[in-house]
Length: 245
Ligand code: IPE
Ligand code: IPE
Ligand code: MG
Picture 1 (cartoon, helix red, strand yellow):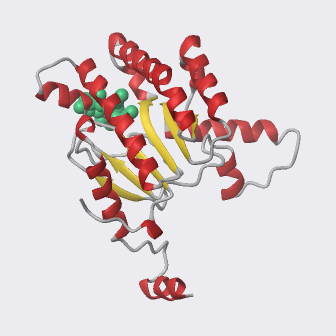
Picture 2 (cartoon, helix red, strand yellow):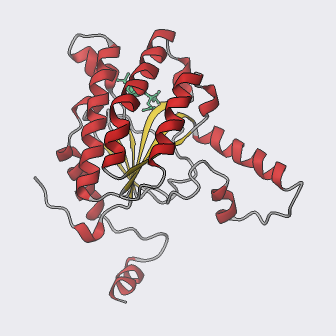
């Protein structure tokens, strides 16, 4: 296993968990069973992030566009989410994990929505790690939602619109931008995920299908992150001088 430098960990890792369907196809089983296996990879990844000391983990579980999938698949994904919450809620709480979510939760069935609300309520004071689930989430939808709310609020008070105030209107208010974005499944695209927040995020793409993603894969991604120089528009020399200071 590769060694990771604990003084240069990404504070926030976001993951596009892609490839469940292709994993199922390779094993000649149905897509739903691929999603089931994917849920196990979620459990392992949450555990690994906690062990490594990652402070924020955002998982893309269901996109706005995923509502267009066949009804049975959407239903199965929602059932898996419910099962995850039923089984993991208390464990997450015991481990000091705070559960949050981003996305248009109003589109979910009341029962699922209530389970999410209860899990959030239970874990809201935890500080060890934040597990943020992107559910019924679309980056463009999030931006439009923010703009609408800004317009609404500006009827009552003057709002100085800058990068900071705008960010505070996004679902990710209070969550720092991701340092590292991982996409499994071999596609090189963002699929409407965190469009605003990934302006300076380091991107890592792997062919590994989500159900096969392990702690070792995660460490590989973090190792890749740690070998990079994040310049934020400055020169490499400036970054080195800043590091010494
Ligand atoms: C990711 O796996 C899970 C969700 C998008 C909900 P996919 O279901 O997209 O798997 P592929 O891309 O078809 O292999
Ligand atoms: C992105 O995967 C969404 C999630 C992982 C939840 P998709 O499988 O939906 O993305 P596309 O359709 O290949 O872009
Ligand atoms: Mg996919």
